[in-house]
Image (cartoon, rainbow over all chains, first blue to last red; front, side):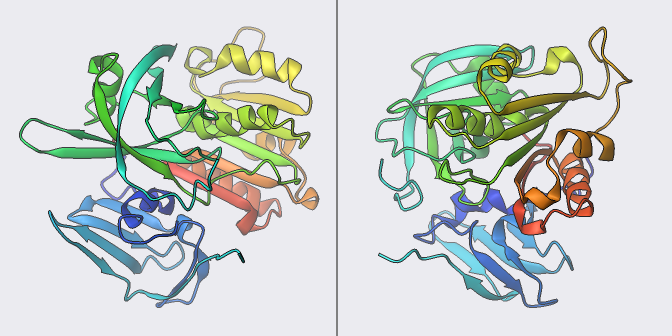
Length: 90
Length: 248
């Protein structure tokens, strides 16, 4: 494996569930750079950084950064136009 | 069972109940997790180890089958020089605690209420979450037809080999096909090879049947198979993938 190897967005669920009440891997996200829309589970996640960096599978731009400190978490979503989260009625 | 997706996600202390060797490098670990809320096949857990100096390392592992009460099973492939898997497979003793968080993952899951045919494509230990689906299918009495294509290096590297042989015989509607990349068993037709178009085309479903496809394995394997499936006309949204990386 090279240093550019990556995981996929499925692994974001645990870390993001520290911040969100819902599971986001089944959510749909739109890339702010190229407009591609798809499941957050399909992002490419690079873990060898001071945090998690998730990139668009189409254009490779950063859609999400998550950095966890000892007592706080930073979430940078400037590369994501929107998140569409399934919310079943009832 | 309350909805596994809505359960609050906290680290819980789990203890090892039992371990079983699956292959020379893979073990199934049965954990007792007080308060486990239940899970769906395909979901995973994060396992966190804390060193005496406070250093922490966490990794994700797929759940290998339906929960039995508060007992859950993981199958862990030992990654040499990994930070977590060698501890779990070589050091962790019955009764010892580790922290787990889960279940997590709402995308790479199969729900027994789904009626579409299912294609499962596994590379190496990527078979673990797919085996959870095979086991859940039988447990739910589902008649949805399943096909599993399992790529392994050699016959000795096949995880769950005996159970898969038994299920291919007894679980009606389950077909299992193998691809060997280094050494094939005696009498095997063809040469060892990496999975290709002919394997996916022969042992998978036609795209017209609109199956749900689940592909799990190393990144390169998953890319190859997902591209083949889309090339065969499967809708990208019906091809669900889960990759695992080089760390363990």
